[in-house]
Length: 598
Figure 1 (cartoon, rainbow, N blue to C red):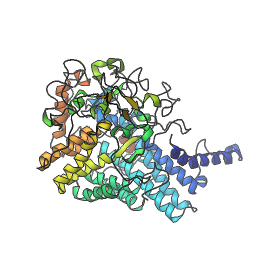
Figure 2 (tube, rainbow, N blue to C red):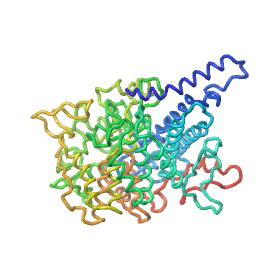
Figure 3 (spheres, rainbow, N blue to C red):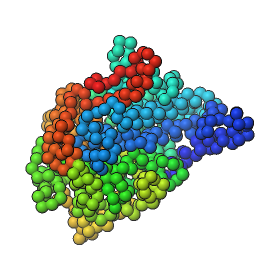
Figure 4 (cartoon, rainbow, N blue to C red):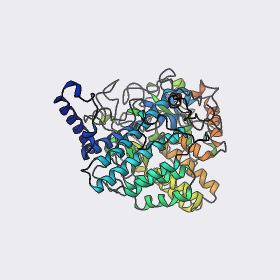
């Protein structure tokens, strides 16, 4: 399935075999600890490349769902687009995150922290080993250094997104666990801003990475450029972000050399079509190739419950609010301010029957609507706890029935089809276009911003990419084999914005923000987008508290959590794991300060 993945794992495996062989020739007391690699073994091209692959590996998280690269808990469940799903007693640490009642000892926070600092430590180890590897060419040193710096920047970027006030750890810090005693405050007790170091790592990667590489799962210069622009966007540095997005859109290619482009929408979530022209950077999931748990472990709870794909576990159900956001008016444009009023998108005669954006049936499984090649979604049979899960099932992280055993593992904990080889989209070209549209709204051209948004909507409006009744789903193309008798599965009505619709910044901002929600739903962006757009205004609290107010009367999480409230000025960022704060301060000096409000 992922041949290039096997190839880049080989050097590390060879190094490990070499260590074991050496150990067998020595006395027992001279042997290396089991599984460890000595500097003598690693200080060469093979060893350094192996360490680099180890740094990539942590993008996929550890065997803990709190470290999932999709950020399905932190970015989607904590926002207004998904419920935790399952039952309240299963994975209970997610409940307070969903209800914005964060606990500093919540295990999910610690899993995210530990995994990402582990990845940072691995990237730093590559940088420390490069000068000792005398068989590396100058070009190899340049490329490997740039890859390691990108990865270090990416891990820090994720931590900054989630926790905000985190320490930056570079290759000159060699303490245990990567971050012990590294301060997140200065001598005056003020939080240290690590954006400059993140920017520097992404800039170095963009300047020194090649555009292409034979192993297409690696990062290239265009992905690094896009992430540098994204880092600027998160700081409202739109003037710095815009020219970088311009470069990526005009000249950018995938590591495999394809010009960035929008592909068929659901192809982005089809394991058979990984690393397409739309993939800017993705976690390279892999199964059934001897690489261990490199499948999409972080999302392996996120299948319909019982009898469907994966066989378990009914987590991550799209919210009724999210379904309602796909309502359109008679001309095919979003409803914006009124989408969550009136009849809801739901099964049954009393549900909404008006026009819909066709992306709804790629984002979620709706009862009675074809669900890939599994037949019509069976409704409550796939909903684990209807009282807290609503009506809909996750879809973007699910493989087709005809792909079982081809892209799913036979070595998982609960069943033969639980882990899959679907890449996790960390950034795709649609995301780049919409971020570029934001920058254009603020410092560029409103008409250019509208052009970018219309590119996204034009793709969604192509009938070839819709879900159909009475049509066979083709798992090779993620499209339906339509005939004259095929009927769209919903009342799909979608259009591009008419000329000069983006007539003011206010109108343009609203349209761009809403399009990001529709296009990127269930991909872990929403919570962080709401925070970016808040800027201390309280808009995030207003949106999420309004979401809770309407959802408490629906069959979802908030129907049993009526006391939940999002607190402005506190809940926008998650608390630092208390165990990490205590560990950092355990030597008698306060070097790590908890986030405000905790």
